[in-house]
Image 1 (cartoon, rainbow, N blue to C red):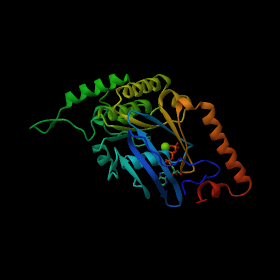
Image 2: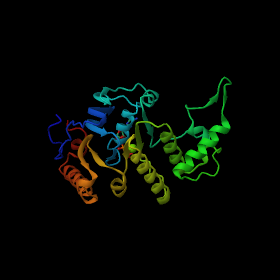
Image 3: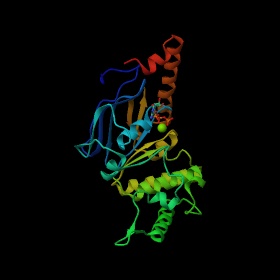
Image 4: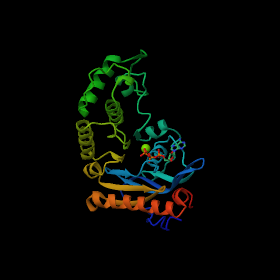
Length: 281
Ligand SMILES: Nc1ncnc2c1ncn2[C@@H]1O[C@H](COP(=O)(O)OP(=O)(O)OP(=O)(O)O)[C@@H](O)[C@H]1O
Ligand SMILES: [Mg+2]
């Protein structure tokens, strides 16, 4: 199945590099009648930033949610540093070094910036079971300063923060955990130009450290070429493009996506639009 072209697109075969930290083969996921992921092959090398691209609804978030233990794949296999990897939950994945900033459920609205930063990572002074409030606030402030995001009142409920501030806290939280694999689902989506640049800088600094590997969902191709070492494109539930960004260009990616749009239009006009897109298998 994986060696056939789908809807005119080549399918990226399972492949591996000696320094892979994560490998995914033949992952599929349906939600009732909708096939979100058909047959996904992907690998992530140590210290690499991999950009995951694709249209709205292509399955990018679904794939991230499978890697982070939120969804279970219907079929397929994953390996973390060479060992079979099948996280039972988000906490289980985090315990194995895989941390996530979600596109949607990023923060708990009722909790403050500090409380969100330390959610399920609360610090207590032993043997007294009190939360070390002042210490956590100090560290929260330091963590946000490190990213360079300005949040005047870190004790306000997250519901009263802007979208960009919320995302900044979620990114700061994931970075603090010093996970080996970081999954960022559109970390720049709600950001202004300045905040977006700060997050990109932060990702560059993390990359320089060399011990964290990142999969990042990004829609803006310019940012892909700024931040990512390699790009993978999801189309029709398959990975159809896998290239180092140094060997590709914004034009090449645009061309592929416009071509997909043209094919879908043609299929629609010949009367099998949605069928060709989702139900051809
Ligand atoms: N929990 C769910 N239940 C039912 N369908 C879902 C669920 N999550 C995702 N889907 C469907 O699966 C497909 C892929 O969704 P997904 O959120 O992964 O897309 P995406 O590539 O992240 O899109 P976007 O760029 O808009 O965030 C969509 O058709 C979506 O409607
Ligand atoms: Mg998404």
